[in-house]
Length: 94
Length: 192
Image 1: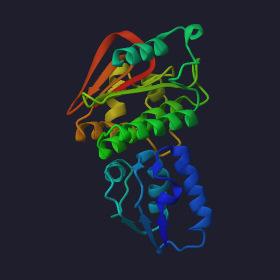
Image 2 (image 1 turned 90 degrees about the vertical axis):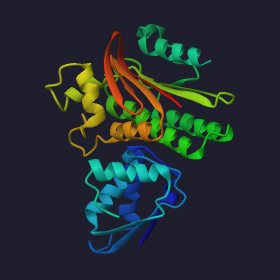
Image 3 (image 1 turned 135 degrees about the vertical axis):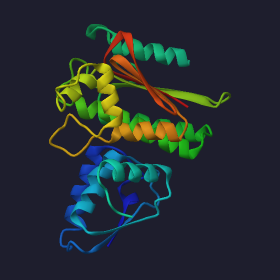
């Protein structure tokens, strides 16, 4: 299953927005998926990502699923946010 | 112009409640107003030729700082809710600044909810920028200011962040000093 983050906006910043996105993801995309299903998170088209938004979505997805794959992570804020989540939120994905 | 915005922000954040101008263009009473203005700044800086990666980082840093004001004062603003948000870019000098200010509880009062042993504003700022901690103790959060500090350093930006009687000056390193003048909430000045 691939999750295209740009469909949530190209600037993903606040916690309330991230929380709302995760609720939508839970209802529409991952409801019936098993814990070992591969979840591909595609950052293509995302201009700005912050740890607040990502903590509500990426960290929570990584807690639910064992097999998370991150693609198109070249954006400077995506790189910086993933670095912060790995250091401070215990995110352990590649 | 830079001096004008700084002066306005300082006046806004330190004025007595009855003298606060909540009708000016810099005031964002709610988060959605702030986000609209932050989006506008993004477009303005891109149009004026600021490097895209720097604009992305500025937007992210200001997004974290502005949203922090709303997140940590929600339901508990001491008087005027919301933030001051102003910015200026000099196309000839290729330099600019962004200011976020709030009349909230301030970092020390906020962090004391999670760490009652905190002694003063300087210690509170040191913890806020270096340790994962949040006053919203039932949630897993508290990495925003660490992100801000790291990216100020990596992108060679400059941030002055005052709360209470302490100010953190962040560029390639961070220095925290004490001041005589008091900012009850927070005043953040980002220059680039």
